[in-house]
Length: 401
Image (cartoon, rainbow, N blue to C red; front, side, top):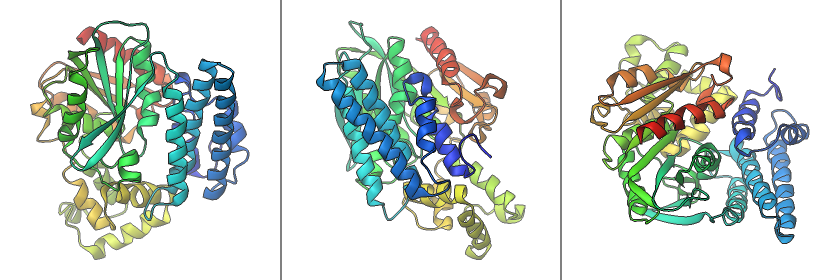
């Protein structure tokens, strides 16, 4: 049994999304516990209702504070509301898109917009056109700074949005005098939820227009632009660094070589023979059928593969999903990375298992940061102790830049 739920998916969402960035201004433990107490374990409707209730209450509190001129209190309430809406709609991933997800996402955006304008200086809402998509973004200025400053560009992964990126990357960057630009690309946030555009492997093409939007700014030092990728963003950031030469540094949290490597492990665990796995991704449908049934029967796997993976990649079957993941492989791209690069590898993070392999293959200045369970930072993306990650990564960036 977990700390909050027996249901593994609910427990994962609570720990990763509701509590993962507490040190960065996220929900408090008591607030999370009180919300969880209203939830029927394993019931998605109950989960959605409880987290939306918390989020709505926080928006109301923020409105009261804003009306009274209490800027900091209002801003913090709106940010916490934004997190609560994200936690609420996560179990609803998949196609057809649930109307409740769309509604809650809209409320999340509204709450975050209210928070953004209350920063000093105010956060800037941007729209970056890219290949038929309209990528939403925000630019946040480091408070109390003048002149050109280094910029952290943060890119996401499979299931979070730029609003969660704010807590993961913008908060620690702003505290240290870095500007920060957060955005959602294809397969992420509004680009997926509302525009229906799936993810793509060539993230250097996606990041290019984002850098274009930053380099011309008078407050950005064009020679000190850093790209940080979180979760699947660890792969995406490295792929972008292999083709985008304007980056002064890259951070992959974690170092993920390919999506396929994880799927191969799942196939092996499901009893698929090595001879068949060698044919990946062209595995016969009849061989995949029992694997697909096993994934569907497992709540966590069903969400990760069917609800999230199929949706993000724009596919409808396990066979299509396997084929869609093939281009997400850094093997032939690592040697092209020229900027200083940091790789994270948390002890208990399955996505970090290829971190050492990537580090060894990197040709230039590089660093490998290992995080241990004994430090409270051994889980995926160090969610149990992000402060330790911030310390090590930003100290390294300070020295590199």
